[in-house]
Length: 625
Image (cartoon, rainbow, N blue to C red):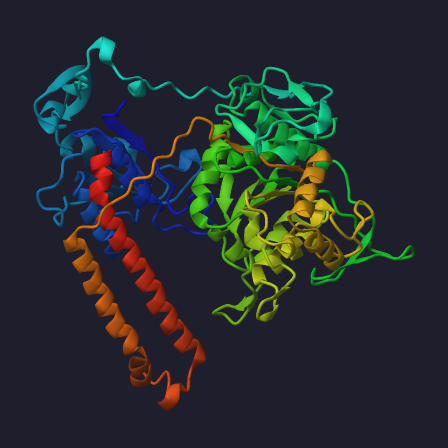
C-alpha cells in the first residue's frame, strides 16, 4: 500500500545507532517520507523550528525537496507550544504536497511564531490550499480506490484517490512460468525452544572404503535433529572427512521454534550450531600468562598469579553455497538468547555488512542490531549496552593516533576490548579468517617475513579476551601450515590436548608430513568436534567448452594495442628519469615510488588486455546463449 497522507514527527538531530548529533536527521526523514508518499499526497511534519527554507543551512535542502513535492505551508510554533507534553523546544509545522514545484527555488511565506492551538487551526484553515486530486497527479490509467479528505477554504471536501491497475502478464495459465511465482518468507515465531536431537551411532563401511570418488555425499552423522529440514541442495565432503564422525555432543542450543520447523537453518547448519556450542563449552588444557600488550602468551608456572585459561574455539570451513553466514547468525543467536547480548563480527570488507545483516534478519532478528564500528569515532567509547559490533580486519589493525585536539585516541582494538570487557564470554566471529594469515611471521623464498599487522591484531584480540567464544569461518583456512598461526583456540599447540609444545613444532611436523598430514589433521579435528567442511555437490553439472575464433580484425586490434604498450614499456625508464624517480644508470632516488610506478604499469596492462579479450569473446557468448 502506498500512503496518500504521511504525518511525521522526525527526530530533530539524532538517529539510532549514530553517536552524537546528526544534523541532517530531519531532512533525511522528510525526504524518505516524500519518496514513500503517493503522487499528489500530502506530508505533514512537525520539526525543529530551524528547519525552514529561510535558514541558510537548509535552503539547498528545501530546493531538493521541492523537486519532489512543493512546500505549501510552514509556521513556527512558539516555545512552550507542547509544554503539556513535557517539552518546551521551539518547533515548526511544515506541509508538502507531492507535486514537483514549478520553481524549486521559490518558497511560500512562512508564519509565526504561533502561540496556541486555536491560532494555529485558524491559520491552517485560512492558508493551506486544497489538496491536489490524486487522479490529476497520477494521470490516466488509474482506478479509484477510496475517498480522502482535504481543505477547500474552510470546508472539508472528498478527494477521489486512485490506484494504478496492476499490469497483467501475457501468459496463458498453462504456460505461466514457475519462476514468476513468489512465496512469502516464513514468519519467525517468538517462541524460543531448546533444539532437541537424538544421538545415534555411526559406523564406517566395512573395509573403511566409502566409494572410489574424491567426495562423498554429506549427512549429519552423530545426531538426528527433531523437525529439522534437509539442506536445500546436496552437500558433499572429502572422502577422508567422511571416514570419521564427530563425537556425540551434549550441548543444546536455543533458537526460535520456526527457525527449525521452517528450515531457516537446515539440519547440516543446525549441526554446526550444536558443535560450535559444544566446543565453546570447554576450555583448553593448561594455564597461561598474557603480557599487558596482549602480544605474548606463555605457559604459567604452578605458583604464578593472574593466570588465564582460554576457551576452546570452533572452525567452520564450509565452501561457497553451504550458508556460512546463516550458520554464523545461528551461533550468535543461540548465545544471544542465552543472555550474551554482545558479540563481535569481523569480516574482510565493510561491504559485507549488508550480508551479515541479511543473514541475521533471515532468522527473524532486527538487522539494525548489527552496528558497524565506523559509527563510533576512534578513541570514543562505544555506547551500546547490547548489540553485534561489525568491523573489518583493516579497522582492527588501526593503531592509536593523535587527534586534532592533541589527545591520543586509543586504537580500534582497544576500543573493542573496552566495550566487550575483560570478562567477555560472548561470540567473536572471524569471518574470512584466512585474512589473518601470517599472524606470526614465516620464512619465505626471499627470507624472513614479518608478521602482518592485522594478523597480530587478531591474536591480541584473542589473547585479551580468554573467555570469548571464538568462531573461525573460512572455506580456505590457510594456504600454508604456517598461516594457521591465528587459530590459537583450536589448541593445536601449546596445550596438552595436542603433542606439539609450540607453534614451530606443529608447523615442522605438518610440513614434514606434507598433504597427507594436513588431511589427517582436518579429519582429526572433525573427530574432535572442532571442524566442519562441507561443499555444494556438482553432481549432474555438465561443463561445455566454448571456443571463440578470433577474426582478422580482432587480431589486428590486439596487435595494435600490444604495440602501443610495447612503446610505453620501452620508454618507462625514460619516464621515471623525467619524473626524478630514477637517475642516470637506473639509480633509484625513491625505491618505493619506482616500485609503485612499475607495479601500476604492469597491473593496468594486465587489466586492459583482460578486458579486451573478454570483450572480443562476447559475440560468441551471446550467440551460444
